[in-house]
Each structure stands twice: as structure tokens, then as C-alpha cells.
Image 1 (cartoon, helix red, strand yellow):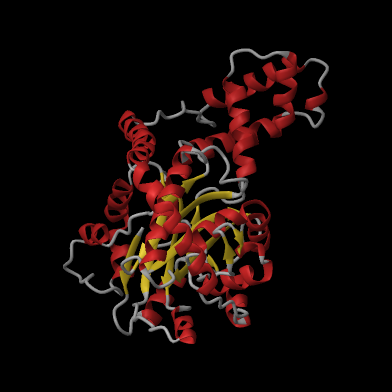
Image 2: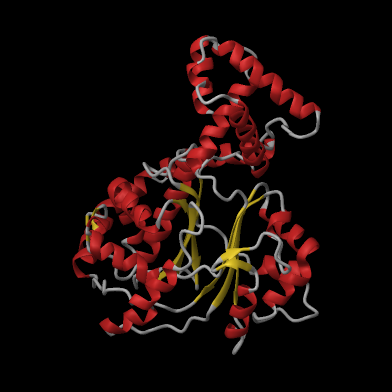
Length: 424
């Protein structure tokens, strides 16, 4: 994720330039001339978004100072492998286009080292979520093509075949013929690098160990934190006005062009050291849970999110949340309310204007209308959004992965063969 402040007077020109990258409002042309996303085989999602000051003025409603923050250009993506390698590939293969885009930002002059500048403006992720850790773009595309071929060959009543083993053998022979003929490529699943696994294991052990070593301190501080939390919950102002209808309509024009949508939101953290430190601690715990608990198809009970991230901006005065999710915006919000409202409260209750909470997890997002007002007011348009596998939901990715696993099995029982044929 690269975040760079816009140069004075350059916003209008940048908006026009970003629009040239799209085929429909907000949806990127994979072969656009500036940054042809479709040529990068490790890139799952990418976006450009302008981070404007939309809700900082809310602070003035409670006689709080309104800090000056610049308008930023945000360029973020989800990729397989190290982010620095992906940035280097962007610069190598689309450097001229990226230079045109970032020339609207401060410090990106014509003589600047573009890769060094992009790295210098990289924003570290406070917490990040990946729906299925280890599933690459290559695997997704190959599994999808395998499913398409098998479905086109299998008869409609394949799942009711009298001899499922014979049906499966016929289908496997057909696929193998396609592979021999060069019309289908299936490669072995890529191994997760050993260095990454070691670092991840160290993280999995190190964070709880550090918490254990600090246990005496937690015992002393916990009662104080509880008292301060309740004091803040009762005194913090609640400001959830109805969002501007024109802004909501602008957002809706960028949604539902695919089965998957993007979400970008930005807002200030409540003033004071208590909320700032509490936000950092909770995001540390969320990041740990995302890495070691929720990396196999679900975030809490929500199963529609491909990727999500939380990022601090402006010396931790604001938090940006960005995600890619299946379904409509309304269903996305309902999913959270019904399945993970407590999780939303944990982190977003530290944002200014969040519906009032009790004991950190109660209330808040359970106040449906106020919650929906809050998230729409803090949502920002995504000017350019790219998805590497349009038309495929997480349900499709899971089904296709199980089809591929069944294809790779040397032998199956009749029951397993029938279950596999039903997936087609």
C-alpha cells in the first residue's frame, strides 16, 4: 500500500487520468495503458482511491480542533509473495504509467527514483486478513479452467450416474487429453516458502509468549483499563447523522459491476491517548487472529471477504479500512451485524462517531441504522478497482479447489466419486 499526498491543485487532473483506466465507473480495464493489471500474474486485487477529508469536520461539532490533513492518493494491492517484489515489477513493466499517476503527488518529480519513492511512501499494515493463506492467482485460474472443462464434458445427470467410478475415469481421461494437447495447463500447488513459515511460526509463538511475560503487568493494569473504558464509553460523544444522499448515490454507481465489490473507509480515532493505545493493542490482536486463526475461509463467522486490511495514517490519528467482498454492500453490512457485530465494536468503537458501546463489545454495531449511517459517511469512492478473476466468488473458489483436490486423488470410493461429481 502506497500513500502519497497530492500536490496543490492536482486533484481534478488526477481524477480525470484515473478515469481513463476504467471500462465502467470504478472498474479497471485489465489492459489499460497506464497500468495493465491483467499482465501481472501474482496480483489478486488492486485499487487507486483518493483519501479525502470527509469526516474530520465532525470534531468541530463538539468543540474539538479540526486537524489539517492532506488529500492522499492511495494505491494498494493484494499479491502473492513479497510486496516489494510486486512493486518492483510494476515499476519495471509499467513505470511510465505509474510515473504519470504519481506525478500529481508531492515529491514525485520527473527525475525521482520511482521505486524508491513508492517504497518510501509505503504504509505498513496494522492488521491484515487473507481468506485462504497460500491460495495463489495461478491456482485460482487453473482450478477455474479445470471446473469449466469438466462441467462442459459432464452430462447433466452426472451426479446420478449408475457407475460414478467409470464416469470419473472418463472425465479424467478427457482432461488429460486436453493437457497433452496443450489446451489446459495444471501445475503443482506452489509450496509456501520455508522462510515465511519460520517467521510465521515465530510470530505465532512470540506474541503469546510476550503476553505471558507481561502477565503481572496485565493483572495490575486491567482494572484501570476497565474503569477508563467505562468512563470513556459514557462520556464519548456519539455523532451519527444521516449520510449525504448524493454521496451515497455516487458510491452506489461504483458497486455491483461484479459479484465482488471493494470497500474503502477512513475516519479519525477518538481524541486522547487511551483510545489511541487501545486501538493499537486491538489491531495487534486482530492481526494475530487473522494470521493464525482466520486464514482458512472465514473472518469470525463472515465468509464473504477475500482480503481486508487496517492501516494507520497521520501519526495514528486516523485508520483506513479496505476490503474486497462478495455480494452487495447491504448484504455485506448485514453479514457483519448478524455475525460479527462484537468484532466491529472491538476496533471501530475507537473511531469518532461510532454508536455508543457497553463494555466494548455490546451495543455499537447492534444499533443497525446508526451503524449503517456511520459506515456510509466514512466510506470513500474507489476510483479504480481491479479483480484478477471476475465473476468468481469465494464459494466458487472453494468449490473449484475441492474439484482440483478430487482430480489429483489417485483413487476414490464410490461415495467420494459421487460427491465429486456433484461439485461439477
